[in-house]
Length: 488
Image (cartoon, rainbow, N blue to C red; front, side, top):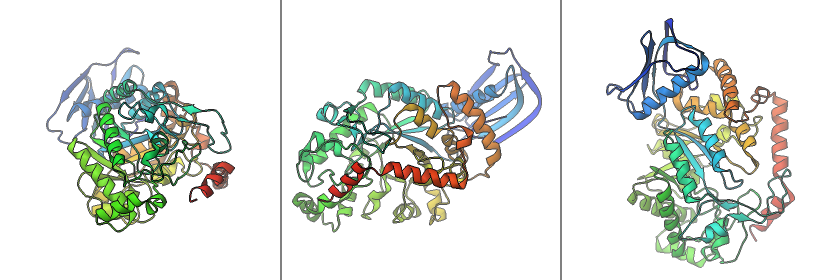
């Protein structure tokens, strides 16, 4: 039989439970206090029917999901069996970027359906970027009317569109997505990314940059020098207002505040930022970013939320250890590993191999499946224990439609789901491949377009060709022009 993720314990017994094709067998569900682990469940199938026991409502739900997968394997019968199951990680996440390219509510729901089938429980929704701000806002309405529309799109050689590109979600649409996820026991974690990747914010409110100059939304991917001015008290006022409105929409435990790829060129030349650095008794601009993250994390704590930030926010060395979880995507300075080794919480979403917007030739299905988030270079035993979960992002500079997104995510998200549920347990890659084939057919029936098996693990020379082809497409005249402009 094909199950994904595989249960921790599965014991087959002699006999089959028969029932009419197209109907459900007799199913009894009950909460069982002795199942102390959250989200854990048991399934017993015998001549009396199906018994699902759960530690809590989530455990019952995951037991029902496993039963659903069993029903997909058999028609009119189920084998007698016993299953005990519990997740390795409490945080099993996927991320969708709707900023570079915008996806409809129905398309987002299809992605949620695909992820939910494999027991993901966190949906990180990336909603603000240099190329678009995607949420209806009342306190700062220009974030919506100005910040959601860029003048053109120039993402690689495959897209040079000189027409305006826009889109945003209304609050009611986002509340609908939250409700849809809640029914599947998925927490929606919004991201408002700052101080970098804020061109859309600055285009709407240029006075919040260090120069005050009017700029347009970016039309390419990249890292850009214009970031929010941390020395301007109006900056924190906007950040808090956005957080307040987001919190009205998203009742999540976590709130992602970004913090990646924020060059400090403007801050170094800004009298307000230099004055703030001195006033706070800090020595470097990286420390100033740490101060900003601490202020916002403290604000979120008062609202009963926990802050997540990208690992670059650690570069100043002054993050408060209270109420901050670090999302580790790159480890150039080993700061994320140091943070984890100090016993502080980390979500592991390493660029290699969990960024599924990159070709299968770069991040193959086997690479994703074999990745061990607790074996990252430099992690001690305490650091490994500090890895609270995993997450796989799909960034959308080069993902323009749902079909491409589905192709890039599936079946790689099945491999992420296996690790999220079973952690470092012994890997059975060949049996996983058979399950991946089986569930790719199921996903097609749900309206998805998973990658064909021929693309999952390509030959070395093809991997090289795909890697070169990807970066050849990435480097365009517009991107080169923006690169040389950014430090002027």
